[in-house]
Amino acid sequence: MAGELADFEEFVHASLPGLLRYGHALTGNPHDAADLVQTVLEKIGSRWTHVQRKTGDPLAYIRRSMANAHVSRWRRTRRESLVADVPDARVVQPADPFEHEPLWQALRELPPRQRAVIVLRYYEGLSEVEIARTLGISQGTVKSQASKAIASLRGKIVPASDENDGREAG
Image (tube, rainbow, N blue to C red; front, side, top):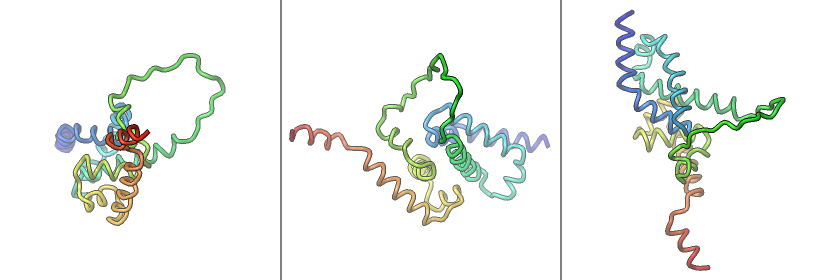
């Protein structure tokens, strides 16, 4: 039991920075990313030996779990929350350094599955086969989700030279 715990601790220590980056890219902010990583690692830690034995690649399994948890959370929270009284004080959130970055804004607007595919492909550098295995989807779905996401991102991000061309012509 102590050996399993030490093994899990080593794994978390080595993988945590990458998992937090992946979570940040999925959720759009570091606080939600930390919550997502912690939630998934809590669940995985209690059955670490089983995960290692059955999956062969615990990191891919955890990434898939994170993507699934993020999609589930997004589905639960996207609905309006009606309250009886309007809050008196406004909660001040610290500014996200990427908040005004056009690519980051466009990435946040993607559906969760498309965002997960883009993050795994271009941020984590995984192949289509690895992404399919990580997310538990077919390779064809990875390709179609990536294609849709890239088309959406292209439509939302206008290169600076295109913006200047439009201004000079008017």
